[in-house]
Image: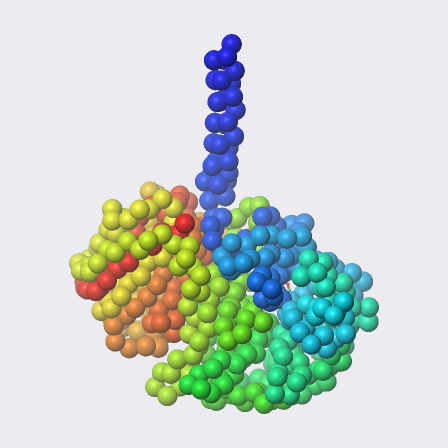
Length: 500
Ligand code: FRU
């Protein structure tokens, strides 16, 4: 009898365990391990990124009732290390003023808004409310800027009683406020996407806003509407350089949506670009609406939405749609007298990686199978190539059924590329299999880091001067990694690191 009971208990435990791994491995093969995804339902832009009392808060565009875009809420996740995220309850839900669109959050240290309680400064969120009925009725003032505050470390949010705080003057696309504290003028500054350009506003109390200036009618890419601006300074060589990020959709060089940026100066009123070049932040197909955290001191940490409006709503993931990129640390680099942004994976990520596996120098003649050299239990890893010759080569992630996700460098055009034409499921949208290209800004030997997490790759080349982010949906898990080169290529050092 005892044995029978033991066998029965064993059976139950084994079934539970295999059911669980079954969920992980079979039903959700595209669920990343170290990128944030909601447990279920639709997500787009990161919103209200703010660091406060040791906790990173990430809010995000969220529709809790479906896997496609719908009435927007702010979902909420928190993290102590920017890698492990814990989903919290929904922070903001639609009301009579409309859906809760994108926006930002700040720690109002001096309680300028007067909404703090018991001498404690509040967290304040500023976001767009989008009135769907107004849009359907053909009005042009259906997007307005509203505010909410939290006096309990971001756990619960109260909408300001006198919303909206910034009324629409009659501009159809009037949204995505990004607010920053401008210490020189002791005031708040808001960058707002207004149709095909950005308008700057300022305020002493976050509740009353006045217009300062406009930027962009004749700058940058205008293939689509401007969205999700972000304005911030970066210290460079003892000087403050201002960066303005602006996402736009459609019209990206590789199709669909992407983010451009401008380098220049901001005096509290106006943004003046240093030149007329249109710079793209991440040339991969899947990096959009990226914005940076507030209240992180001199660190500039960005998270983007790892998808593209061109197909985001039809990608084959279930029961959720979309992931965020890994957080990236931004800096500047001079290339031939011009400044460019660099993005690199945050240092916290290496803390989560296993000891590096030094593969050493590799001489690729046609193809080199890295797979036997690596502990390869799941496709979550970083691969670093140091001092590779600038000749044609590619990194190929492969599986048992021959799906290939290809990330490479093309010498003739001096471009990096992502080719997912044979990467598995691609027929849910006609443009998905198209090759994406990124110009190489650096010269000389190539150094790159590739971060893969089940169904995505993020390429950081030349110290973060060129990035490419792409999602893919192999029919079977990736089980092989190749280095390939038609003319052969020598790589001084290859390092593989598995994620915990
Ligand atoms: C960008 C965007 C924003 C808007 C939000 C709506 O992806 O279109 O402009 O606030 O998404 O979900």
